[in-house]
Image 1 (tube, one colour):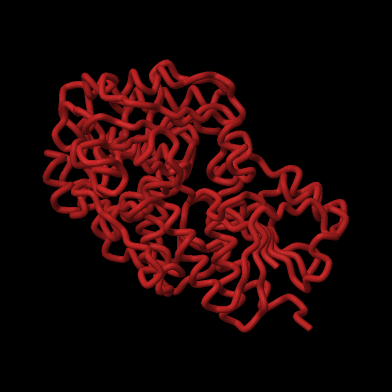
Image 2: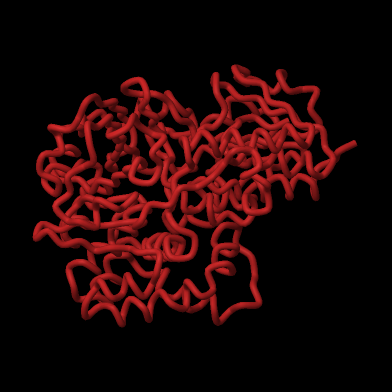
Length: 466
């Protein structure tokens, strides 16, 4: 039995059915997908991704790449440019699929960028397998060290120490800000390096027709293996799954404890209770009358745009959130799927969404601040808004209970919880029949299915199946 039909729960179920086990997935909501659901949030004909939309880790996922997902309707649309970061002078730092093209756009920082990224991108397959998994020894120590030594630095220190141009510094700290931590914290550079390398090696694509197609394709593979899914089946007690020999939870510790705490010693329950959640997000979706009128031309071709200004401003915005406040000029992560996928909106129209980080559970309305930031770099943007849909942290959590307080990463990913999460047992529990497979386990947040993959493999080795 798997509880939760997000990408990790579905991935776990596929691994188990492929091993010959009989698997049923129970999903509390009326649709599968968890963080990969798409809906008409604004107007008819406009398809919005409610949570995950840009899918670099899905395209790079070692497990997903073994599955025939294209046969079940999943295709990726790549924008002309994965990422752009506009500045007030009308220029932009640009992450192109090519390391060379990216470097050439960074002027005197081009050599430094190539020196940093070339070795990482050259070994992207190895590093992806290592990063998208639990901590484990490797024979490739030199290669890993080339990544790991700079990765342990803060994003702010790496950007300021290695780059001189405003474009390169802003581009890198914007990538690091996906950590949802202060950019002065150790290891935030790892997020920037992984996401930049993924952009070069695998792209930052969208799922054609919406990220719901990821979940639908995974579900189709599962059913082809004989697995079943029941929607609208909320589990509140172990009594509801008492007939199951083995149970995997695609839930975070806060959801698991009321269900299963009686099956574990008090010490393990206390460890789960100590698990820490990170900042939340405030998100706005837009139906647009035309493309966003970015001042920097590269932004008009970019699937993702980091809207936050120069290095110092991005660092200050994330510092404000880390300190428990909000920024007047927040760092905004914006996606424009219809740049790559014309099925997302009626002819001539576009969709876009953006979010900023806020303290966990924040009730501050950030909509005007987000739109002001976009307008700052794309004058005339607000006049193109036909309709909008707004979600604060409480709305995010209502949509997906795993996103506690709006935390889309399944728990804060600082050094204490980046690799060892939610406890030192990782996917296992004191009960050999119960396992954890959500983004609260390694490698954490993102659409990649690897949490479910590793949890299922652990269950196959450790559980009593007869």
